[in-house]
Image 1 (cartoon, rainbow, N blue to C red):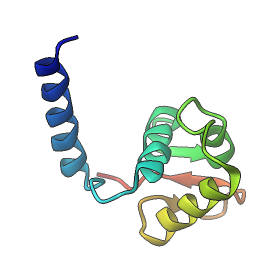
Image 2 (cartoon, rainbow, N blue to C red):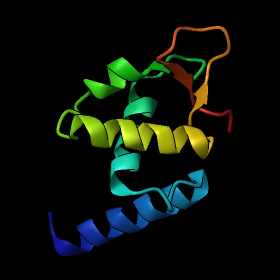
Image 3 (cartoon, rainbow, N blue to C red):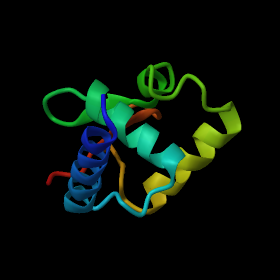
Image 4 (cartoon, rainbow, N blue to C red):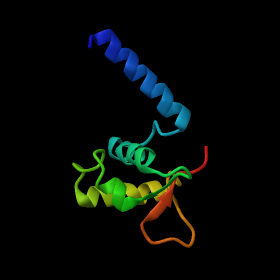
Length: 94
């Protein structure tokens, strides 16, 4: 891959993140977001245990992962699924 292709991909990624409203997330929070997108069911629901063990989040230290998850819940980037088990969340509808 040449440098121009890499720059083009990065520009496209930045544009997509702005469109989704996730450009202000930290790099760790973005990893959680991408893991949730990758692992969510058709309704946008996912288990924090599943994303924790995904390829996106395996390298994140345990405490850092939970701190980022808490931040994302506070910011409403992830939402708790009402009446569900404690580690079950959903992505907001776009």
